[in-house]
Structure formats: C-alpha cells, structure tokens
Length: 430
Picture 1 (spheres, rainbow, N blue to C red):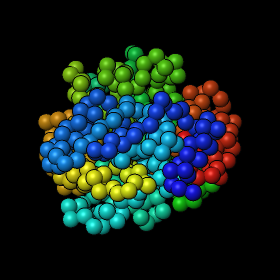
Picture 2: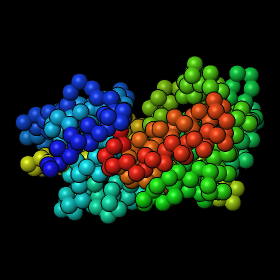
Picture 3: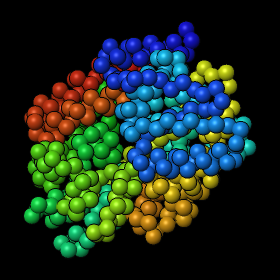
Picture 4: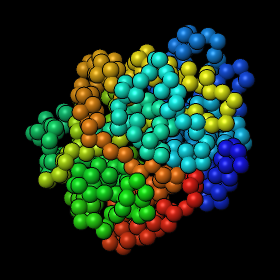
C-alpha cells in the first residue's frame, strides 16, 4: 500500500470516528513551485509572508504558494483532506501534539537525513527539548521545530501594585500564586484565568513529580486519580475554580474569555504560551509582564513545551525545494523574521538569545523567562492518537472544572472514557 493510500485509509477511519471535519478541498502543489500550509492569526501570517518574501529574494528559482488558515483545527481538516485526495502540501507547519497521526501513517518525510547533510544547519543550533518532541520513533527527527515556547503566567503589573501584591518571581510556589489570586479577586476582577485542559494541567502534575499517563513512551491510560502526586496536583488545579473561586466561573468565562478579560484589565494573571504576545502587545492601558509557573511544595520547576515544526509530505519525487525552504526558514535570517512578530520563541538558540527576541523595549520585558524554562520543558506523549486523547479529555476535564459534574464521578468517567482511545489503530487521532 502506498503512503498516500495509507493516508486515505487514515482519513476514512477518522471520519467514521467523527474525528475530523474536512473542508472543501486539498492543496494541490503547483508544478512550478512548492505549497506551504500553516496556521496563525493576522500578525503571525504577516511574519510568514515576510519570510516567504525573503526566501524568494534569496531563491528566485523556487516559487512558494503560502496557504494559511486561522486555527490548528482548520489546519488539521485541510491536511486530512489533502492527504486523502493524494495532493498534500510540500511543507506544512504542525504542533508536536498533533503530528503523531500523520507520522504513524508514514505520511511525513523525515527530515533527519536532510539535516544531517545540511551545510547551513546543525542539530546543535536548536533546543534539544523541541527536537526530541518531533522524534516520533524516539530517534529519527520527523519534522524540524521552529519554536520552543512554554506555558507562563502573564500578569497585570499595575493591578499587582495597586493591591500591594508582590509580583511573581522565579521560584514562587503554588501557595504564592493562590495568595496573589485571592488578593486580586473582587469588585469585578478575578485573580487568574486558565483554560481547563490537559496542556494547562500537565505542568502542575509534573512539578509535583507526578505523571499524566502510565508510560510516557507507550501510554495505555491517564493516571489523574491513581498516582497520589498526580491526584494532589489535579485537586489543586480544580480547587482554583471549585473551592477558591479565583477563576471566572462558567457563565462569565462563556460571556468573556480570560484573554479578553486580561486585555480589559480585570484579570490579574493569565496562563498561556507565547502565542498570546501579539494580542497582548495591543494593551496600552497598563503594564504587563511574564513570569514562570509556580513550583509545587517540595516539587521541581516544570512547564509544558509548545512547539510547531516544519514537516514535509512523504511520497514526493523529490523534496529538494521543500527542504531549501525549511533550511532558509530555520536559518538565522528566517528565525529573526518570525521573532520580530512576537509570536515565536525561536528554536535556534543563537536567535533566542539575541535582541531579535529579547528586546526589552517590546513587551514582555521579561522574555528571558521562556529561555529559563527550556531546561524544565516536558512534552506530552508522541502517539498516533494523542491529539484525540487530548481533545476528548479536555472536554471532560472542563465539565469537572466548572462543576457541571461531581469531582469524583467526573474524574472516574474521564479516565474510563479516554482509556480505549490509547488502543485505537495508529492514525485515528483526528
């Protein structure tokens, strides 16, 4: 069976499982150039257009058709449709938590041999944590990561000062965060905004020396209730909403998102990755900054990797032009162009440690917080079904977080309903 036919089988199975929503068509490659599919908001796409323009200036013999979409869900739908139709893009940008279903079906041309032969790039140029997240088999590099963000705490410095609350600093604890959130909550303001999801929960579990799954390499079940260290972190996370009420309740979050509330100045702290920065830079009514996640009592520093990588579709007669584009995008010039958008933490360590990223005149002033987190970054499992595990677990976790179902019953249902997804055939991630 050809690789494209394997991908078609992947899509058929995913559709039967209700795992994807396909759009109207694929992305046929232009015979005179390459097609690059990626996602991002307007500011981010502007950065990618600048990248393509710079590449075209350096390589006028290679035409690039940039085909952006707004969200990762739209990207997954487009890729699924394109692979099913046998016309995948030459290059696509995908998050490590979502590439597994394509890698499991051998739909991706591994970049390892291309990087090994490159005279412009070397593995040592990049964050090892970001690289490891894209080694689907644990050894061979499948895609080349262009960023290495982490989950951080964005905070309203003016609000902290007005309430007399010490700003968060490296080494602060869960107790410190909760005390700050309590002090900042009241009179229409909430102390903390956080999405109830596995990626948001994971760093707290890891900081408390717990694990999300029974075996990170070959997971068969979530371990949110069985491991005492994990369960303590889960309860602490849920208590932010259910017991301490420092997070906006369900109805208020539905009417105004935590990000919108932070932009308006009525949220003290907001948990997100670097993706939020271009939007937060539109704030002109108060000073804000970024801080590391707090550490569990007796625990260790931890954060979750947020990383997207350039992947090449398998089955092409050659990948020379696709690799030339990736090689340029991952070079110093390409990484500087995207760093200027504010959206990415460059995976190239030299660019990440340069003024192109660390410029204190552009908020957040404490951008080094992302680099300081790099040694403590962890990734979720690399499996063909992880994206579906995460999506369905997030929906169930949200039910518990907002009190729509009881804590014990909700967590029991979560583990029971998610467990069968780990044993589904590879490629049914959705």
